[in-house]
Length: 291
Length: 169
Image (cartoon, rainbow over all chains, first blue to last red; front, top):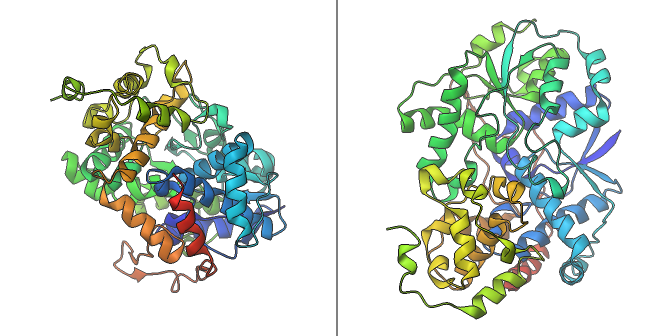
């Protein structure tokens, strides 16, 4: 299985552990990734400034995928996944916008391809690679771990756009975790937002949202929190200490990307999964993982 | 003072309302019947007092000008719960995005970080700059030392075309 991969900004500029673990673990499951020749913003922050320009960027990403000759693209970031999906939807439903965008793309000899399918890490692993294949690849299954799961907002909503999982009761990431041997649990704050989009103008509120969720999860006595979006990773992992000081709580919750966890169970070395890059205290967590 | 208070002396701007409706790509703002499902689930309600149903109502009443210059439109966390849960396809999130675009157009107060992101995209294609990460054991890492591939920059023609896209109203 061969896919193009669009990383977006945050993964390429700071969430290196997500990129490293994806690059390591997917080939072990028979997925070959082809990088786009140009890195580009998906249009997310641009949407607030000029929606048309944001949709143009989203369409340009799909045009860059078209250059690879592939019809599938992996977009591991929730925000990029949403923005590009919405741009695609708009181009398909609004002829005027599509004509204008196609004109702009033509100036760079680029062509929008409506047949490109957009995948996220979660549905690629769950729907295409499949739980069976994953189970067979696991050489060191997890044992006795209880984990909280955070899906993030933008791969779940809004359903009429066609999203990765059910908007109100997503299960795919839970199933992916169960497949590699750990237990997940439901909790009241499961669908709460990490707040990352508020970092643009309301930093304290953003940190307060993230750390309130972390505090609630910590109270459940779980072994860790599993995520699969670089923005959520930034808020819950990189900004965990800052968040704790905003709400005056003591937070020490291990936060890992699903691809890091999966990598451990298929026998990839810690440093290749970027596990030393996590800013949350994951050392104790790692001692509970079979070596 | 709440958002609704600051509308007490406001004059409706019918033209602005028409423009907003036109930019909603067929979403039915007019259908909002104030059920407040959006507000009851809003991520930004508790901390920042964003009440999406009020925004819907004000735009429907054409009281747009105060909204456009208000801080409140910048408090949305874009969690998309309101889009998902609205029974009338009135989608406060999309209305807020159009209001933000109008604020930029009218040179109202816009959080600096958004404009900075746009200028970074113009410069490098990306909205962020690469960070050095200090590990838990105090080692400083960057893409090169992590043996991650170099980031490919956009072709030269990109900047001019993106500028053109930004001129679109």
